[in-house]
Length: 556
Image 1 (cartoon, rainbow, N blue to C red):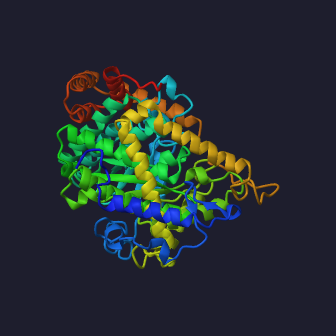
Image 2: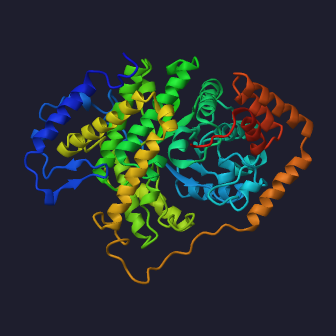
Image 3: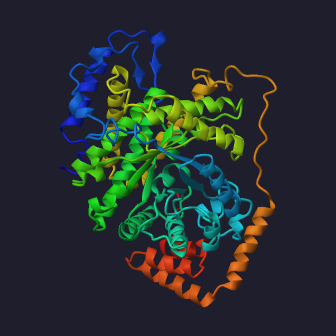
């Protein structure tokens, strides 16, 4: 198959021809006054009937759950026999504070851990660095060294619980710290499981917590793929994220297309480095956003699986069926939460969660209703978890896989979301791929335009946001926000100073020199990096070595 022909000329070409012909047919009787569109601008017909799917090859494009092309889910019974992992996002202040929240959530019935890190940790700075001032522990937990990781993971069953870490530029550091602490506690690296986000391309597109330029960042990612395939086989080496692309203002179609374009770039880079696709692809995972347009979100999830199967089998020639399975985590949309009437957010989160479950997610985080104001309180975190539990145990929507399959509307919308996403992907491929498109600012420009249109629609009232531009109330009561103790930063700085004073500096210096030498060559940097962290090198010191070799990315 030609490298640019991502869809093949079979199922996807048929899909485009079918969808285009149906769209033309449905344009014949329009009432402009009653026009409805999804958040991606897809026009919604007043009525969908069997004629909406006439000529549609259900067997080829929908199939059965657990069978290619996986439109209906990657497992035959989906959530009927086993619910998704309920993985609430937590992380603030010190490692001890976050460990306490982890244990609270596990006791409340959470089935997986998910850790947020503060900005200095994400950006590769120790807590005592001048650029860390005022940010230590504010949006996540501060992790400076193996000592902090020991505290973060204290008394947690690392051989039983899966842990997701939302970390990108310093993903290799946090993964190795986790592995080192597990080994200290007698848990083999082959027994630990979890996920690192490790998705640098979306940082350049949407989020900004990058350190190094794109190409050395891609090298770090492929080094992680190779290291984990050999030493940490149960670990998901990347969580290719549409979440932050959506939070930056993209549409659902753009979220899907830009994320899959990034995924293509990662797989291609790994293959180009000499890795066999079936050696690393089964551990790739994805991270989607859940928004309010219920049926478009379900369609997005369904289309994503079908597209990934096509990409992996037709472009990359994957032979292992696991390589073509899209396993994904979903988080409800933070950007949809409102500071006005914050309890309304409980309903928004419930709607978004149901879309994710009906769309076949493997893992789910539900936002706290007060997150537009501060870090979530314990009450908000508990309500968010209970939302998942009520959906899972009381709603009945998990009793059969993909219960919306065959819906005239859902199948039509799935087709159209896929068609439009392929158009974007092929446009990016024509530019040379995701990295080249990022360097030219293409994705960022598209997202900015969509974000502007969305905001304008709220300002002019054409889009209703309950409690914001309609159904407002006077004297809106706000919950008391969570506050971070200002002493936290001083205490964390003191911990770093104590570590540096007590360690064997000669061992650290030698280990960092070996890391630099590997970075200058083409060696896998995770091996000397692990030695440096074991010797009590800090996250900032490791990152500084790589800054010196790789440079720092400056967006044009």
